[in-house]
Amino acid sequence: MTTKNSRFYIKVRTAFGISARAIYDELNSIYGDEVPGLSTVTRWSKLFRDGRKEIEDKPRPGRPITETTTENIEHARLLIDDDTYIAIEGIQ
Image (cartoon, rainbow, N blue to C red; front, side, top):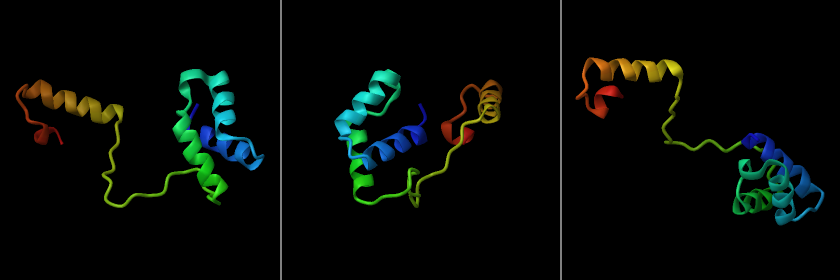
């Protein structure tokens, strides 16, 4: 289950007045370990009760943007193959 899907489900169930614990139990009975923890469900349920509309995270300034792609992994492997003593700074 994706983060967006779980947050949307929490939002809808909260709008129906369902408790965070009941929402967590519903998600857990269907998806098992793939769902967020009870504290996360409780936090998002409270945010939606308090009027939050968006299910996406708010942007956080100063947070580094990283991306893991197969191309990046292959590039790092090639660097390491060329120089097995390369420092992390050299890979970055």
